[in-house]
Image (cartoon, rainbow, N blue to C red):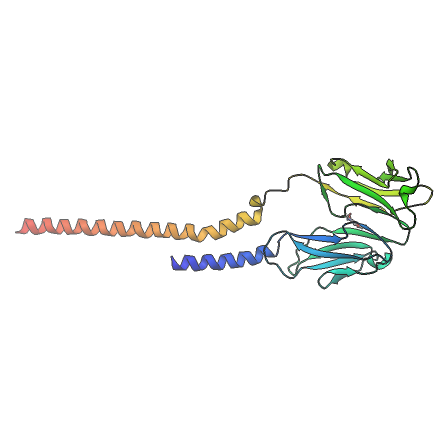
Amino acid sequence: MEVSAVSLLIFDLVLNYLISGSAQVSVTVSPERSQFFKHEGFSVRCEEEKEEHVTGWRVMKRTKNGKVLPCPFACYISAAFPFTDSGEYWCESGQGATSISVNISVTADPVILVSPVLPVTEGDNVTLSCRCKTIQTSAWGPKATFYKDDVLIGGSATGNMTLCSVSRSDGGLYRCKILGYDQSPVSRLTVRGRDPPAPLLSPFIVVRHLVVGSPYLLSTILLGFICRDRARALRARKRRQTSNAVIMEMCQ
Ligand SMILES: *[C@@H]1O[C@H](CO)[C@@H](O)[C@H](O)[C@H]1NC(C)=O
């Protein structure tokens, strides 16, 4: 039993290490949007979804020219530039596990679309906002227009538009335009299903339970064999003893 307790501990340690290599880490952007004006500041960080202590995650950045650069702990950009800070950002662990990636656009133009940088969930209300660096959109009439996959989907006097209870079909490439002025870069809105798979059914957890449980199972089976053999030996001894007694009786 002591052996199985020790092996259990070792298995658990090894597995925790292996599992932490694939821990759920999400990439977060602050402020939480996908477009920024030139010279604005933003940060990209990695956040663990579970409480487990995982180290070694770092933000990776792929710029427009395809260059991949790590940010040591997080990317803190105090003044963004279109060419060096636009691109794909994601989190990567030392073991090579990765988070989803997000695309950020930094523009020198005066209009941006403010939209969720991370995937939204089916049923969410999503607010799109067309923001202008120099003019107050609300001062004019219905001036902002919104496009999904290059199709006009609506206009707004306030510069905001809410997509109510989004479904997967709302996912796509969005941009906006301030009429008679300028338009924003394009950003992808991703809509994912409402139910993420239950964490209990994750293959890692299943394997972990199987492997951690197996020393128990094995020791139980072994104990079963040992007990059966002992019982057999005991019965055999008893049988021998009684037959000896019989023989002795017969000889007397
Ligand atoms: C980000 O941009 C790259 C290159 O334009 C593209 O291949 C990728 O699919 C984009 N990712 C997302 C999440 O939109």
